[in-house]
Length: 247
Image 1 (cartoon, one colour):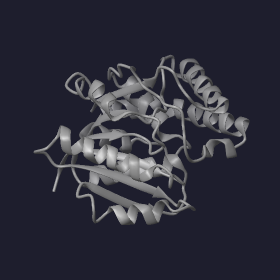
Image 2: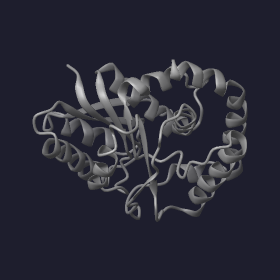
Image 3: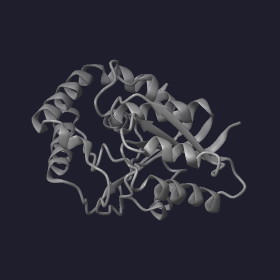
């Protein structure tokens, strides 16, 4: 079976909202694409709360839900594994979002209506409701990408993106090894440098009402230094990788 659209959603310790978010997106898919094959792929990244149990209870109730349980590998690793699953099942389009209930499904249409104009479309959090540490990292990454690559991306790591499946496969083939801390950033850079119009579409970002922010557990400077070093090393490979993507 192949799918018109797969939604990739990593989840970690989201027991307080996971059911609501899953029903929100699976109902959205059924209503928007009633005659097409679509699926929501949730990657449970080794949650320590009841997220796993709740997801397992939802599987027999929701026909367009796919659940993957994995050992904790971090948000980026969960996203990558979700992308791989989406490609494995033959998804024509892949959309990625998060499970923390900070986005609204109706904003999906803003990206979907641009799908014939670009193979890689990003939203950006016009008013971002996040902890100061995350806002700082986003600002730091925006400046780093501009300095190292000479390109400007509003929200390079945003978990609200629509990608053509065949193009995503090309990007995944060029993803750095070992896997970077924030792979979505590298996908965004490669897409932009290969000539795609990202659009940077403003979307709604709500206050987080449940769960915990995992990035706070990391030391701020360690995150920034690691990301900067990964992006700097990748600069040496970028031209070769962009040529491979364009081929």
